[in-house]
Image 1 (cartoon, helix red, strand yellow):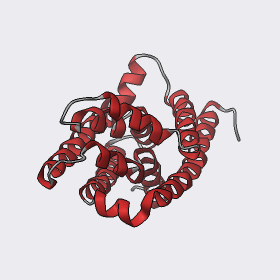
Image 2 (cartoon, helix red, strand yellow):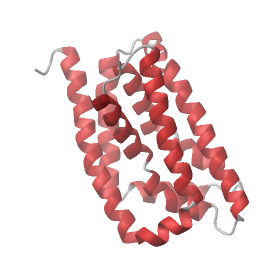
Image 3 (cartoon, rainbow, N blue to C red):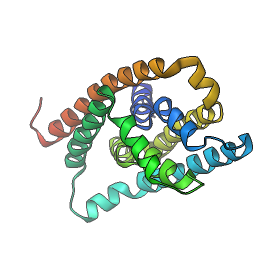
Image 4 (cartoon, helix red, strand yellow):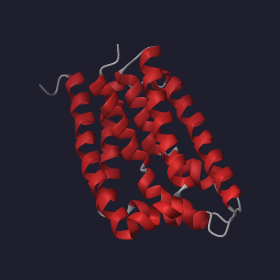
Length: 206
């Protein structure tokens, strides 16, 4: 039986990492001047591709770690540090700037696979998160929970991309900045918890 608290924490962690609110203006910029039908197609292709990639890492990530000799507690500490660095980027507004730089580097007309699906949605942070979450809840039930969370977060992202113009007008640039910083604070606390869990598994913390 999956604990409701774990389910909520998993959802919040992945939601903050994927950051649909911060990605929406990037999606809007990447699809500027395109027809609504083409925007819908790009948003759907990007989220489906990201879902497949995250499912692969959720299913095989821990086995790959074991094959190369990395324990789950060690990966939990490393993942927590990585998420903490992401939180700092969100707090100091460096994350969206880097995303914008990545999107400007790509001159292809269809941005659904790169840079949207990879690395903006299924990037190092979200990949590390799904591996960490499946490691906390091993077995098919844990995998099903993580994939449910992945699909829920990506569904929210898809809806926000489809209504990106309306969403950006409602929140405005200042509103998006405020929400991103609040999510950054939350992610910082969650990342510290991952590190503490990893240290506790090693016997370094009470």
